Picture (cartoon, rainbow, N blue to C red):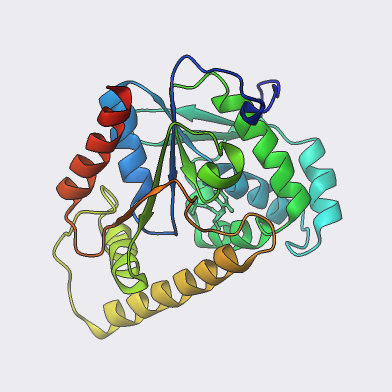
Length: 250
Ligand code: DC
């Protein structure tokens, strides 16, 4: 990242503005929720998954194994990743080049999931993420924000949903990228069914990796509000989350 790492917020530095931590598994709608909350309350929206994706992309381009931590750490040492919050999501800049679209491709998605299991690499990411959010006034979205990056975050929301519903949303997002939690009409052709099954399979694989890694496995922080959106509409999720943030700000 381009900013200089600062002291860990866990060292009880008092922030002027809050950190809103949004964690949860892939496809739960975290990005939609985080972008909405950031706009509503005038906070920066930082998608930490994009950092893992950017490093994974560099590993792909450098022809490195995703499963070997030491060379990845060496690579990280001369890598600059910056997140530039925009109205809809983050612009992702890797070593000065805009890779916002490329990091969403499926090969990068798979590589990011594998790269993110490495403990030292995670420590490197966490340090950068703490520096980015140190002043507060951020909605930070990821897997370990409320547990590892900002265990003292003022608001923690763990957004979950059943794998089937998340897979379904991901598929709908692929055919209509506007909004993960919306429900555009869908064609039930054999090709569409197969594509949906493939998305669900990949999602379960990544879930497995996220939940079972040794370092900072995906789980709700003890003080997180768990929102299970399996049977909720987008409007209900946004309204509930807004209520949670508003009650903190009050
Ligand atoms: O949220 P995302 O799909 O863009 O995340 C990409 C990968 O990075 C995903 O496999 C999980 C991992 N990740 C993580 O381990 N910790 C985070 N704070 C954010 C993402």
